[in-house]
Image (tube, rainbow over all chains, first blue to last red):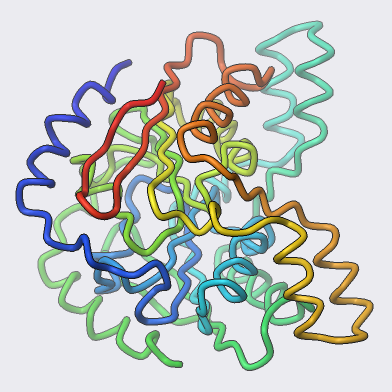
Length: 169
Length: 169
């Protein structure tokens, strides 16, 4: 595996027409997007976000629980005041449970107590239902004492087969 | 704040030329990119990654420690075998300490014990030096018992004023 060998030539093309060196650190639109790491997701083009506009937090599933550290930094130090949470159809998180993944990892390192202990310590945050998970993640954020009062929080789904978004909450 | 009101019209334009509904869940290039949530970062264009190619994990700083849950899911369930870690110049994480941010949050909610307890429980993972933080995050991953043996892990910086990447490790 060596996809990284293509980064420098690809980046040289990007640099040759780069004209965004003046952009400021704080997101221009005061927005934070939380979404999944899924390879079929690309928030900039799918939502019409320009470079410099928004913080983009991505993790397996688009968990706001895991994103909390970043959201506090985004709001308190960099002035964002709106959070949009996206989960998507066909998400890997809909396909397994903690028990399933932990058993799989342990079966790949039989008898390895270090691996067993490490994997048992992680909540992988899978979810069984898409729209419910969006609602739960928005609720978690809205009820969190560290979220700034007055923050606009919206929740959405993205359909990987059509490219369409839908507001859930 | 209501940037989200622009999502639907922007997305309708995206959908009108969308032709990627066939892409599979596992990343085609077996790659995971870990990078910062910074608004000036856009891994797809900056590295030449196509839709469907790679998992993209983003959080404040591009922490591999926080990304571990997602990386395990990415490798064990979705077949990725290479991780590229990017931190960047002008990163917000270079500008504060845990103590500074905790004090700021507490001063914004004076006497609120719930807020104080919540913010004191978070390690915000700031770092004082860019290349050292890339090296430390790559090291954390390479030494982690949950990373699959034989995984290619590379570490890079991205310069937000020039658009250029540089391999550190």
